[in-house]
Length: 640
Image (cartoon, rainbow, N blue to C red; front, side, top):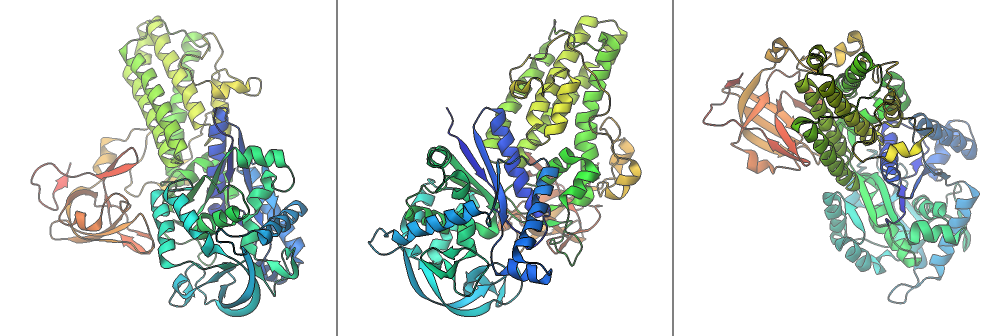
């Protein structure tokens, strides 16, 4: 029997309204929660808002409100967005709620009594003199800065000197480092584990747990003149929700006996991967089991910023594409865990290609044929041939692979695996040509083809359910399965559970295709138009200019874990392109290598670097392999 799973997002700071950056982590947590519950695992999903600190007090003052009125308003906005995006959490915690305030005091009281492994007080008083970034709400050192500025807020920190209480982090560092090194605290992806272990080598010091001149926060239980440092207050939310000081049985079930999975972005890695485990060890509490740290993303090639006007409201996307499609489009453009660029300008084209054409069109065609040829009743499969049996085998393999990817929190790769199964189902359907079988009155063979197609669609609904819960249930309803009356239908992964004779229906397209005038400015940059059947014409394909190029220079793009800047030669013409292959190739290994690239792609700016082309690469099990020409082909040669 699997352990209970306790899934958390960071609690979001309420100095501003929610945007797609916040939604990204919460949607990921929701998808994982739905996946595991579909497989009958007990899951507790926690999210919420972080509501104390100097920055909140300043924002409230600027808005002409009290801090409490301000946080009440903004916290409600987060709930509104999560509800609108179908994020079904179990508990929405607020750090201003009485339960949490009491838990913070209880936790800190325990720390005050604690002794380190070498017998010292875990908490001690002292004077802090140094740098503090109000934007980050954290103390910083010179090595945390870039040209004297905070790397996230681009402002200089203030110099402060005040009485504080400190946590003796240095006494716990050897134990925390060992737990991380041995994967007893498993930090993912691997590069984040390496980054965390690297922090131990540059030197970490004891840190402050309180502020002397901050009024908006939780008073220290052992010195009410001091206010709990907002980051310590925020971290304790995880044990508040699981019942640390209020429900011993609940806390033991979810935290003591369960698997704890924290999801977050990389800017808060040090607090969660080092400080938080040390605090828990000092309090005599088990540290988290897994911490998955995802990257940052830009929007349409630019850093998300109010001044640039590219801060995207998740509810706007939901209104444009539907909630489920917006969830899918937000979580699948690049690997979860990596830096990437959210190309909102391509959402319409991806919607039409992946959802309307590949999945929706297959459902429409198959169901319509059942309605026309079998009176709307699911036919029986009486004569499966090799192709049909292979289709069933492909479903089984895809389900196994998808489950493995979900377990690794490889959400994008899981969606890709499901998408590949959709394509295989379309190829099966087209190769079997059921319209010809209908004309030739081969009713038994036609029934078999349609049953295998409908049963594959049923499995696709189950696989897509974590990403697109409403559309998946609608597809199941089209196939005659009512999830409201029969909730267990969401977990029937065995092949052949679709009942012959049950009624299918198709009152409306699953994913209505977006009108051309809406997508014209958002079509793929090379100008290829998808037909209703998902195919392109030979004239459209001819518009792509594929050419052989030789890599002359290669280097990493600053502040990106994923991107390389390549200077390539197309036979007398030099081009600069950006490629997301940094995690698969070392820059020096590419120099002199021949590649195949799209040469007539509209220029784009990615992470501030102009890219005038795109190289081709194949993906297998999450690894990218560059496509290269076979034979001695000169640079600039056209591929046709």
